[in-house]
Image 1 (cartoon, rainbow, N blue to C red):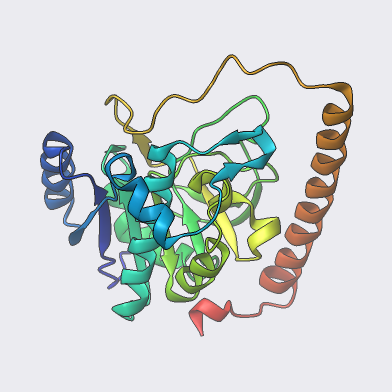
Image 2 (cartoon, rainbow, N blue to C red; image 1 turned 135 degrees about the vertical axis):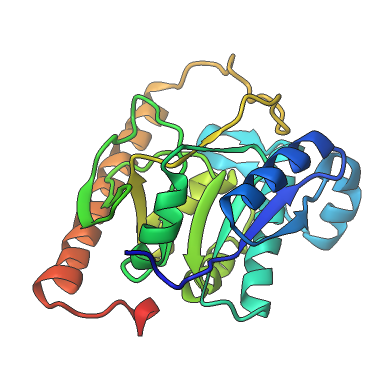
Length: 265
């Protein structure tokens, strides 16, 4: 049975990416998803202004490298989309990057599952990129008609498609106040931002085969020194412990106590 929720979408799109905008706007029209364009911030052309307004080093400490201009622009564009959701006082909304491509099950997910999922989690991510270190499954919160909602211990990266409640948008704006790593890293680190986070299984959106708007990252970085490898290993164990504790608390709150999510109140 469908829901009455007509969840709006905000699409991040650079002015120069006309083909992308035509493709995704046509797709969303066919899918019956109301949408609004968010002009993406072209940091390559505006870095002087950005550095004047945001007085900090844009340094991705875990990788020991400066953030790319494209990463900074993407990050700030997502913040702009989240602020639009809060200003419009929307109870829930979707954020898409303009390279989103839709699975054939997406219409069923949108009509039947997404609003229900957003009563269980303030961030619902339904696109992701898996690596060797990410989880391809997770603790199930609810089973929908097109997908399950799960909490992975090691979330997938990528930020091409996710939905938030208003509470989630407010929390993310606060969590994203310091631009110190790519947006997708901040989005999925629920042990740090503390916002209820979950993914769909399977993902209902993927990234289309466009040339990336974000510069390629340095794949020829020097090997880590032993001390740095040890530090990262210890940090990884700490993150894992925090995530296990988070999932345990979530299960108690959602299942054993039958408590309503704050986002559904």
